[in-house]
Length: 261
Image (tube, rainbow, N blue to C red; front, side, top):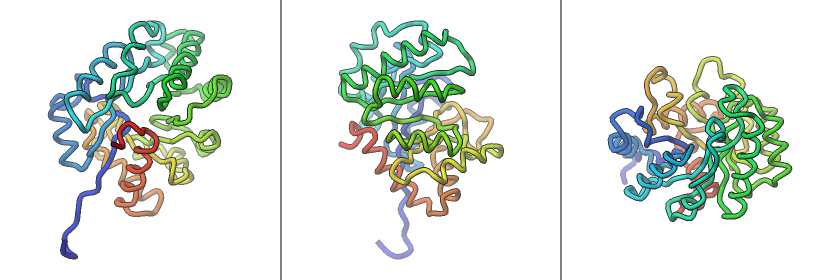
């Protein structure tokens, strides 16, 4: 390779919802756009029985896509029936997303706590990573993790805490996954958290079709936009985009061993 030639950095989108109908152009178009942007591996997330099945189906049809099985706190009231049978599928690489959401309270808080604890138990039983959603429920999230035991691979998806919460997550060995929110003008606290995150615990995600990063804010998000999240993190941490891509890709293969092969 000559000195003037460059290669496109390779990325892993550790959290996207490619099966959702709001993905621009549909799943196939989103996957093509992602690959062209350098997003070489994607984990599409289950949030209930239907989306977990869809995630497995998409992952089974695409060698660069993997699935998770989980029940989002919004849907905790619907119970875990039917999900257990999906967990052992060879394309499933994690449990979640699961956790607590006290902002919307779409499910009763006691039920959210019960279902979160049950999914932590599943992560332990199947020796799988745990993908956590927490919103306005930091204290109870940590309490339940402490009570149930923190899975060896635990990921706080779409991290929106301050450096204080970041440190608490890092203290229990968890990974912090940053989404397009880190690019938002009013998200300085999250950028501060990204700045102090240990290099070996840093992940990137889109959470697409939600939370499109600047300059795409207001549009439906897609995995191809992961490069904007990475560029912001590179600026925040004062390192090259290539280094952010290299480090977060390496971290993703450790946090989610199932995608490493």
